[in-house]
Image (cartoon, rainbow over all chains, first blue to last red; front, top):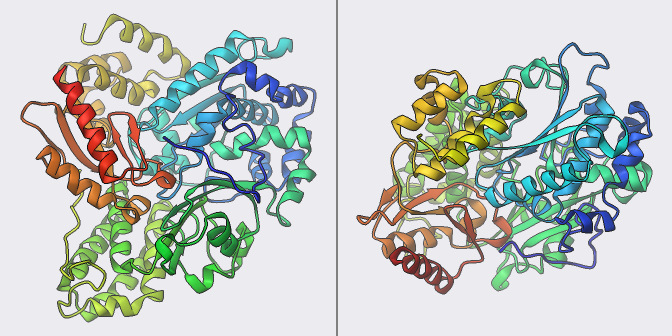
Length: 441
Length: 160
């Protein structure tokens, strides 16, 4: 059961309907549902875009691209149909928030899609949900059927004379498909291999037509922005980092859960106050700030940083997906690096050499290293390989694999050195090294 | 008819929601597999026909997606996440425990065909770790006792 938690510091916007039965369309309507889209029907497309720009809403999937700006890239005229595509492929390790939105507030996603469509001139939306989230696909199917039955979707939405259709779609297991161009490939019935950019999806997307692709949480935030006003949403966060977002606390924390906190919230408070501190009275060792694709922070770094996009961007780092993973001092960082690389190697689509070969080589090196076969030169080689993947792969998955690896080698080099010369891993209970089960596909 | 009439009709209706027939391929593959247990040669031929693709093109798509299989697995497919958030809260121990209790390893199936086991990547249950999926059902906040109960319940179901 994905149970809900709460903390007094939360400001409930996108999670305001959690636990209130809002999957029922009547309940959703009682809770101000479908008011925003009806307001948007009266607005000019540019006015909708400007409201979203004012809100400083930035992509909640991980990249943090300003949403209003993304929408403004869609050309006004298009010979091909335009689309809105919801990225519900949540698969970034540490991230479990879109799941809750789809479970508790699916109509907010539908409404967000419609408003995005009105803003850019699209009349069709697709909600792509990862294959493993079958129960959420079922919930979305019902929500869509109910919306159609009420005339909120279809040929004459809200009696406006305008048409809008939203369809559900499911994946079948692939992290890379969360990358927006691979997502489009998958929706078109192909292997999830990314596309070359430019052109970007807003100009050439699904079946060649201009496509707005946004994360579930990003779109679910939009109706709230229309109702409360962009400035009010912006003011909840920090300058240029508007609003609140869902943070998923996990790992060695006393109170794991999904909490909605303002952008800019101090990470130290998130860990010790919201999260209740480190479990079993251990010490904080490291923090993954926003999913496994982000630079791993030391405890000292984590305790100084505020959680917004620009704070991390100024460091050349990334706020990420909201997946905040807490590591205590019983964690072997070499093993952690290994498990992360196993993931990226498994999920690499295989299209480009630096990612396909780089993740494989790095995983093999880390397996050998963690099981006592490491050589001194391996430590620098691991960093060298990762640095040479960075910026050289066809899509950001290569970067996502390189980034945590580089940060772990840089910040915990001594731990790597402690594994040399066949010494058993200092963190394994019996001092003996256990081989991680090898994932095959 | 390779799939049930109901499923075939559902496919024909939904395929209209896309500008190209092949766009609905991945969901059709998954729902066909749900009904048949795995993607048989006949199922692949059926879907190739429905999408206007060659069987090779359909197999090419199948091989990309980790939920899709061309060989049968157990009736109850136990998927244990060992990615970072689950690993930190005992995911590997959950996997080892399942291996012991079921007597099978990664991607193996019990002799009676009831259970299979797989070590999987992040299933989106990080804040409720350690977690597993059995088919599509989530079982979260697992302790050794809870895990035993989950497996027992499925064992009972398998005997019915």
